[in-house]
Amino acid sequence: MEQLAAPLAALAALTEQLCAEQARGYRIETVGELLDISPRAVDQLIRDAKLGFVWAGRNRVVPHAELQRFLAAGVLDTKSAA
Image (cartoon, rainbow, N blue to C red; front, top):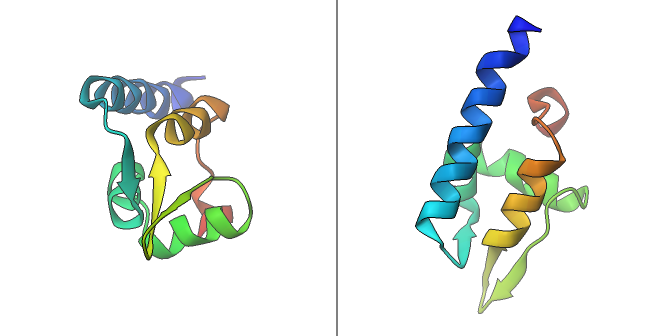
């Protein structure tokens, strides 16, 4: 149980930060930085339909609400996302 305490605390802090920012959407690189994973891993999450996005011109943008939904779904398993 103690092993989950730190990741859950980090997840709660990230969720709080996202709510405070009230951003409308995040570029793939920003999502990677927020989740501490590579942009390539974010691409894989999108391809696996685990993370939604919208097109903004030629750029894919992850809406704020979608990132919140993803975070609320559970802790990220980086081995499956890599």
